[in-house]
Image (cartoon, rainbow, N blue to C red; front, side, top):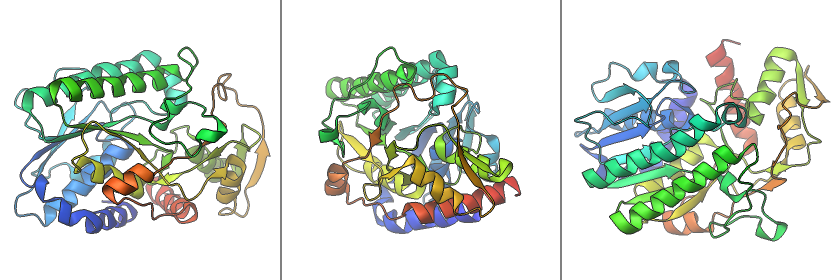
Amino acid sequence: MDKIIREDVEAILEANRAGMDSLAGQGILISGGAGFLGAYFCDLFSLWNETSSNPCEIHCLDTFITGTPKRIAHLEGSKHFHKIKQSITQPLPKGLDASYLMHFASIASPTFYRKYPIETIDSNVAGTRNLLEYAQERKIKSMIYLSTSEIYGDPPADKIPTSEDFRGFVSCTGPRACYDESKRLGETLCSVFHKHKGVPVKTIRPFNVYGPGLRIDDKRVIPDLFTGAFYKKEIVMHSDGSPTRSFCYVSDATDAMLKVLLSPHNGEAFNIGNDLEEISMLQLAQSVQSMFPDVKLTFQKSEEKDYLTDNPQRRCPNLSKIKKLTGYSPKVMLKQGLLRLKKWYESDLGL
């Protein structure tokens, strides 16, 4: 396991070990398990197994379209780690025994979901229903469905920070609709299966998660900034830099999702993120630039014609609900998180 990722996972485990006893001897299915967020949970549960007298069985399901075999290669050969190469839209393997489900399989980068809109919808709708039907049949203990903060669209100023009861302001036909609207329908499926079938599912709405494991060719803003800095000695801004976001380091996001998975709050939706730092894209670019003394910052229009279409001006979470019900609070601030990501990129890419 990579040194930086192991440090992150050890900190998460230390903070949550007392509440993880219910995982002993259980099967855990992680769809999108080789992806950015899913792989952190594969590492987390594998590390927990090292000291458990009754290890859990980790089932990592992935198509490896955006997830990479390299990210989980160190876990292969482990007695309690099982790789399943297939789409979440296909029937699950016969004999699969899982009491905990974590549905991360999705195309989350705007560049890629605009390129593969139908595949994006299939994963978020058909894949979600597939897991919910499995959950109903097997009478599982808990499931989390990874939705997105993009279901809020572009909230008005009086709804920022945005709480879970805001219904969203989203285009159903724009270039982001294949992702935003299919995630919304996924939430509806979860709500219906909970209310009518008793499935113990919770919904997660993450706000701009970043950190080690995020592919440098992912095409989202932070990987793009590092790509420019590492390879071109130039960070290129494709907007005027005024839109703002609140970025959440991956270990904080993993901690939050684990707390929700193990909580009794079925049928609920939870924002996760960092509510302590809302910064502009220009400030973000300058933060990355400050780590590279010889890198310049420039502005130019993106070659993608829909790059800024339906792009929210502000995005910041209200975390009152998850703080009250689970005790979660973000710990890693942006400066520290970006430095850890830079070190991971340097190690992973041999820079």
